[in-house]
Length: 272
Ligand code: KIV
Image (cartoon, rainbow, N blue to C red; front, top):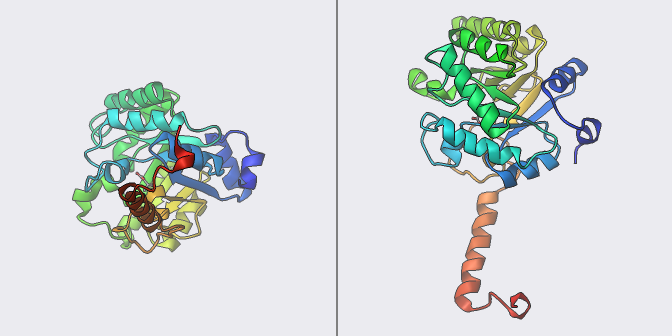
């Protein structure tokens, strides 16, 4: 259990902004179900992201685009039932906020009402400013997401580092300031050069949570299944694996299979 766990009973959006002010780093991981959320929350992780990466990790899709609002609500409500302390952020999936602000608000309201999540995350900068404003005006906290925004993968064409060129870096810096001024409580910054990420973190008073954005930002996020080593095929440089769960689980499943076939399971102590 982290020391932060004892200090804050419940993490709110305000807690995160206070953490940044005090120079305390913010920890964030994904969860898509009750059991995982309970473990992550109990470990003292500050923020749980119900990411649309569920589309890849849970459903096996190649991109985050296919996941629906109903599916995100199902995942988020399972997560909310597992937590006591962490702040729960829920991704608005592709196609539920880009067309107009009213639709964005309807989607965000459904997430808040039907899942019990505490806030929503949207990908993009000035193109979605009006949608963000509309959601914020309804009292729903918004986390931004800049840099590599996986919902735009077909526009980018690849998952490589974003904003290496001056023009894109300038736009990113402007977008971060716009998101702060509009009222977002934090921003995820994905796969951008560390120097740029640090500059962005220094230019705003809201926390910048990085993934593949170096250590000059205010917090870090990873996809839990990746950091546990449950996924093997995804190997970006920024990913630190804390376990090799793929190997551990394979060994356990193989042993179980052997025990069943040999008749060793169940044994005398496992009977009624
Ligand atoms: O969906 C997700 O898991 C995310 C993280 C990669 C930040 O957006």
